[in-house]
Amino acid sequence: MSATLTSTADLLDARCIRAHDALDADAVARLLPLVPGWSVENGRLCRGFGFKNHHHTMAFVNALAWISHTEDHHPELTVTYKNCVARYDTHSVNAGAGGLSQNDFICAAKASALFDQAQGAA
Image (cartoon, rainbow, N blue to C red; front, side, top):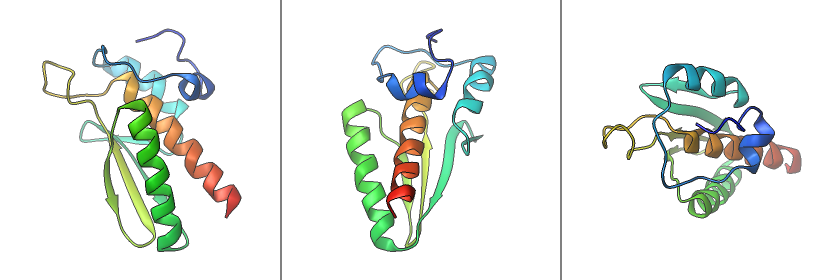
């Protein structure tokens, strides 16, 4: 893991990389406080986002899709009328068995920043 990822600002400035390693439990514990609202569930980094209507939900999902495309790191999304749950993990670590990488935390920080921006504009 890059030693430079010590703040939320570091995560927001970082870009996802192709060559990455699975994070150990200590690294996950160090990074998790940098992405408030996110939790680790079943080996995935998860957060739910609530909106006032379907239009705002879909606008967020579309903007998150653009971030995912830009970073080449894609979440699993569950989308309902006023909610979206994002789940990040990295399938290519641990010899293809999956796990968490720094890419998951980078994208989680960017998803949270997007949500905060959307809430401010609403």
